[in-house]
Image 1 (cartoon, one colour):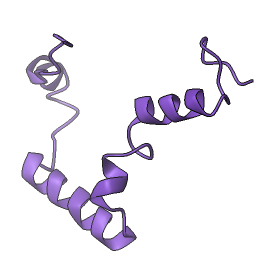
Image 2: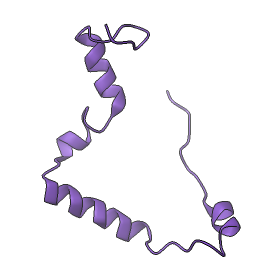
Image 3: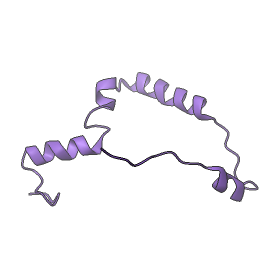
Length: 75
């Protein structure tokens, strides 16, 4: 099991850059923009969950096809 956590806090960077940078969008607005973009471009949920968006899945497929070797070098 992967025990890594991807939780991050941007409090420090926002504090350091407070004079120079003020985010205009929140999480909800950013998420909505992504959803709208996916709908407009026809990017499906299956594509989002597949090799087009998940590098590990693409690497596994290339390995299975023999296009990459175990060192992830092109064959």
